[in-house]
Amino acid sequence: MPTPTPTPTPTTLNETVLKNAHPEVRAWLAAFVERNGGFVGSVHLSGPAATEGEIVLVAAHNLPPSVQNGTAVIPVGKGMAGTAAERRAPVAVSDFQTDTTGVAVPGGRAARAKGSLTLPVFDPADDTRLLAVVGLGFTETRDFTEAEIAAYGADAATVLKAV
Image (tube, rainbow, N blue to C red; front, side, top):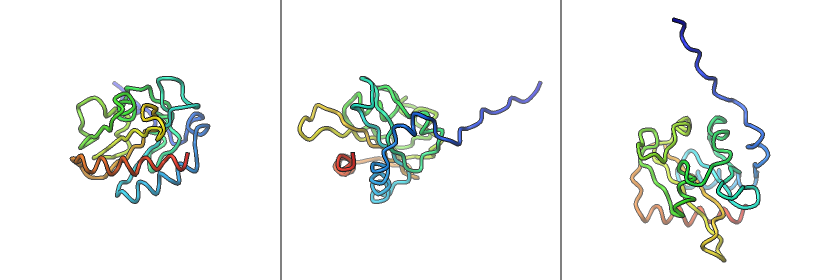
């Protein structure tokens, strides 16, 4: 029996990722990831570019093209970012690579993050209006404390200066 050929991993970004990219948010994200000791990150926006019930990737830091392409448009409720959007609360996973809760989708494991956190960001004038979800991943497993989550969340809210 012939050995199955593995599915190639995309090495280029798809049209949706390229169309929705925000270079100013990408610059903010790189600084956010660095100052918080992470190694990967993402920013998804709700709003004009997104259909109701979806969030759209506008910036990524150190995420492989396959992960960016797979997370270009996320339904609310799917994956860590979609779950944070649905719950309207941070979602923390101590080890993305071995998570069995269902919020860490298998395709995202290509980013190689272990401790991972997604943080919803709301309109300062209307705390019911979700504007963004910021993701942050670390090389090591992490059990995030409430104080850490609050601090990362406050820093994540500064993304609004770049949008």
